[in-house]
Image 1 (spheres, rainbow, N blue to C red):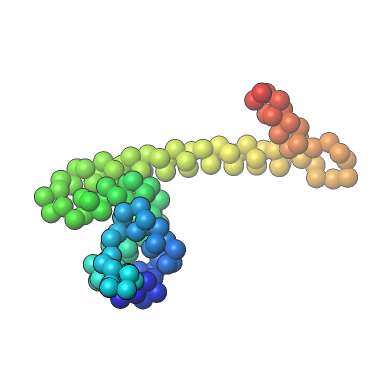
Image 2: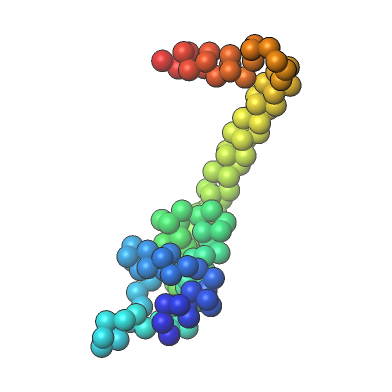
Length: 133
């Protein structure tokens, strides 16, 4: 199966498939003329990787999850640990975004948005810039 067929079946663009090959997440066979020759197993692996990436797992997490998926002697505790760590990162990001939203909402509310030049949004940005130096 060629890369365009695999792309259609896995839902991943050819560029992503080539990247996953470059970093060693997949290793399709090569035909005599050097073209990639993907198997159904490769399609399954790519779909697995696509789903993991859609859930926000890092490339290294995907590498570990793929290794564990293919290891029938695995312990689910290791899989759960990877997922729990990722969930912690997501929760931290949500908290950060919630705080960011609250700050911006307060600034938008404080801004009159009229013809006057005074703007609490710009004042806050300038204060944060000078305070960060």
